[in-house]
Image (cartoon, rainbow, N blue to C red; front, side, top):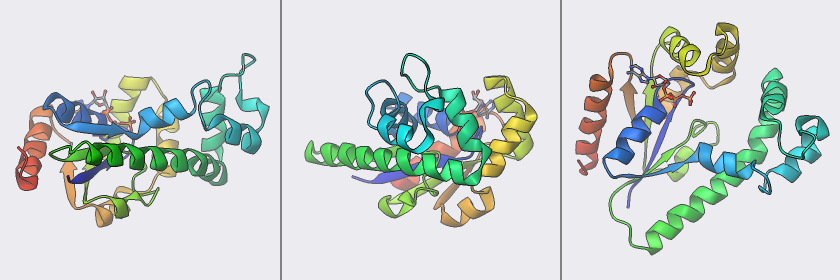
Length: 199
Ligand code: ATP
């Protein structure tokens, strides 16, 4: 069972690749879903977040105020690192547990790990190979503006806070260039699946 990391910066199109893989019947473990569950009511990340960032990032009903949390975390490199440390540890443990479970079940075919912070978490070492989705900064900005309604400045701030595509390309085994239409994107994915031998 091959474990393939799938990553890319904000708005690059990793979720679009993920959805395509799922539609084709592949198993995809979603780091963002694990991270959302970890910060949902009763989730394992809430206590360490409270200890690290204080009650100001929680709403009156005790649930995490995601906007306040993101504002605080993205305001400084140190804040982001502290939040990533908490969430990444939980995501990594859960990912390992799910892979182990699939192995025990005798799962056949590759398992994909859709993880925006794959390289930042140092998880490439645990992958058999890594796929990186890229697109130009301008393309990513216009996609995210359309998708999330964020301002150009906010998106640029988030892009600047991530590892650059140049650095990521050095760590990736394959680069998927998502700068044109979806047909071109899916053709590249299909070609890579052929290389993996699972198309
Ligand atoms: P994030 O890390 O911010 O969640 P992402 O890398 O997962 O981003 P997607 O959500 O897959 O990116 O794509 C961003 C937006 O761009 C989505 O609305 C998606 O539908 C759109 N999109 C992705 N690829 C293309 C494409 N080739 N042509 C047009 N729109 C696209």
